[in-house]
Image (spheres, rainbow, N blue to C red):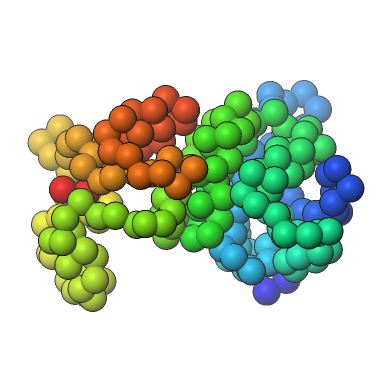
Length: 217
C-alpha cells in the first residue's frame, strides 16, 4: 500500500534511512508536541503501517522508518545489533529535530522499542508494545495462563474474554468505572536478555514510568 506521508532520506552516521513523516500540528506559532515513532516487525517496510497511521488522530505527528536493509533503506556495511540500531534511531530523531518520542513497537519492533526505552531512556517518553515479548526465553506466570492464551475461544466468545481481566484488555470496569489493577505476576526480562522477576519490573517502570503493566494472574 503506498503512503501519503512525506517520505525523505535521512543520513545518520553514514547510514541512510528512508523515513516517512505524517505531520501533526507542529509548526510556527504552535507549541511543539512529542511525535509518535513506530517501529515495525522484522522485514516489514514502513508502508505496512499505512492503514494504522491513517486511522490515528491527525493531530499526532507520526514517524516511520525502514531499518537498514529493509524497504528503501540501503544495506548497512555489516550486521548490526539492537544497541547499534537504537543509537541509529536516536540519531534519526536528532536529525528530525526531536529530543523525545512516544515509541510504539510491533513484534520484532517491540523488542527494539524495549531496548530503546532501556538504553536511550532520555529519548523515550512513553512506550507502547504490540504483539511482542521481552526476549528469549519467554516465560509465563504459570501453565494456566499459556492455556488461556492458546485457545481460539478468546477471539470468538466475548463473555470468556471479559472473565479474564489483565490477560485481555477488554476487562469489565469495576464500580468506580476503572479497570481492575493488581500486582503484575509476569516475569519481565531486562533488555540484556537476563530473566529476573519483581526487581526487574520495578526498575523497568523507573526507566519508563508511563508504561502500564497489564496483570496476567
